[in-house]
Length: 93
Image (cartoon, rainbow, N blue to C red):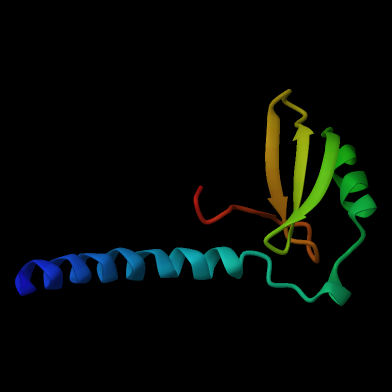
């Protein structure tokens, strides 16, 4: 019985320890202080100039989350660094 509990606890620790790096990456995906963020309107202008049709811009995990149609006609949910407007990928991509 003690062996079974130890195995279950050990497996749980391994599972959780494997998830922690992913959580850390997601937390740091867009680690930018708010006073360094550019306005979302500027991001929309930038994307429109590249041929995107922006439906909505929100914030998620410290990033700008954009719902748009690209110049190629693809519907996307894309994440951008709010300081640089570089496109970033969520940890689960």
